[in-house]
Image (cartoon, rainbow, N blue to C red; front, side):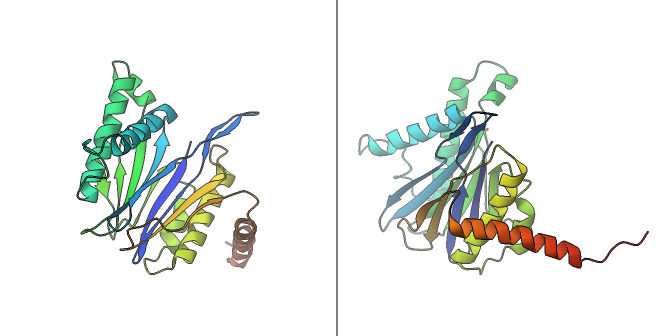
Length: 243
């Protein structure tokens, strides 16, 4: 399983992804699920993946090959003129990989299913985020839906819904995402550290802060412990329901 979040703020975008790909009794594996492309002064694009690992790795490899091989090669996410066109290209590439990998039949295709979050900005457009489905179609983030999640979404969503504010700073957004991820990690063994973080400041058209947060990170540990203590204290302050 996986957990990834793409969050839009008034002044930019924040992305976070876990790295766990398997979680057996004696078999824990990790793999990168966040990938970025940037052309200074022109575009910054970040992609996060969830689902069948072979499918997502093949999709990323195709996007990499088509963006780096020959300068005239097209289509390429480095040549598309808008983020909408980038989302279309990624959706088509994902659908292509699933179609080539799967045997005939809907059940076979489901085994190779994957979903993708794409975010960033291309010069002339605004920072935005898209959620791409296995069928290749996609939706764009809105004021009513200011973040997208993929993978194991249910445990970390409540804190996002309650505490998100588009005016919050990058530091506050990171704290919010760490609480969301910590809640998910404690509820599902298939999501785990380290976490990959990517911050993009609007209209900068360059890669911002990019960091891997390890399990022994002191700030993460303080947030995890502090959130647990705060929940216990809040529970004790609630009125008892008299029977």
